[in-house]
Amino acid sequence: MKLTGDEVETNVEEAIHYLQLSADQDYPSALHALALRYAAGEGVPMDKKKAYELYKKAADGAGHAKSFVQLGGMLEAGDGVECDIVKALDYYVLAHKKGAPIQNTLESVMKVEMAKGGYDI
Image 1 (spheres, rainbow, N blue to C red):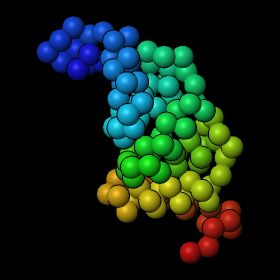
Image 2: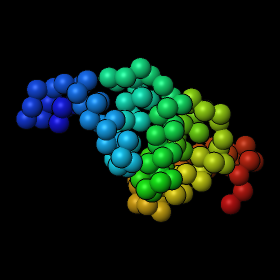
Image 3: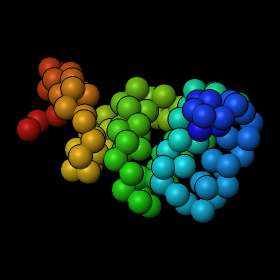
């Protein structure tokens, strides 16, 4: 609410503080939300490696579906981490199994890799 101003005055600094407190308690949604902020540099300094670590903690520790999608995207693009298409596909598959809407992402990656001859189904 403090991030968006829903029913209260927007206070990004305070919102980040509470997100961090929740993330410190390993709440998956807080880990994911804080990772989004670090990835975009919203309210905190941009830090792709920290974003990746937070997404990974939310995904691996609690199975947070959207974090699996973000991990896949970062690995696919080499965004703050070394590009790894195979690992990206693994995360997309895990996201799909958790119910995340990833068909377009997964489909596009597979088409590109199949065209390059790098991924055989």
